[in-house]
Image (tube, rainbow, N blue to C red; front, side, top):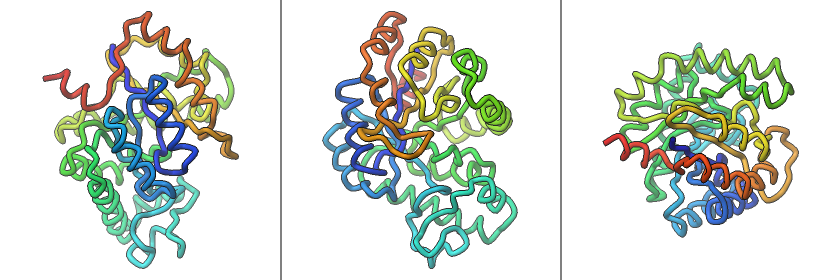
Length: 282
């Protein structure tokens, strides 16, 4: 079995950048996803260039974050400071209902791919902040861009609800909603990804415990998982924040945990990246 261990929000802050590099150099982290409009993106790119063994993908931001294009180019997407709305549900509805919004969305998505390409880093994969990359309108726009810019993989958030509930019953209602919503969205996506030469894992873990990827849960996942391939994603940081779903030092501690490394070795799990999954299929 091959597992990708990814950290999101690379480039968002120095605390996150530092945690990601440490988790790769000293822990089990294999890849990360870059916010190209993050406050510390230049630092992140420099660190990635110094660490070529860390693969880097694009963390698309189209809600709850900053845009690449100036507000006057996408006035129906962002406020005067260039920020997307924090209400992902309303934002998602607008992406479906307004053609004007869709045209600006297409411009912003291409600008984010172009910004990533300008770094010179190989594009490992594509995923999205708060998983907006699998929104139907966004997904349709992303596929040709991902293929054109050379992405190798694409995250499908297909988490294991029952394993998560067996670990704890916190946020049961939200977990059920996530399982149904993301399950329905992802159901018909695999054939479309294959047409665009994008690989994906059989399972993904991190959604049900987002911001709470404690050692005990990750060990449980690694001991019980049966899928040939899986991605586990984290939100590590060297400093605590005020967001309940991360980033946080707890995720960093899990990535550095000897117990996590031990179970990987005991089960003969192979640390992978999206590019290595593609190579393994050849």
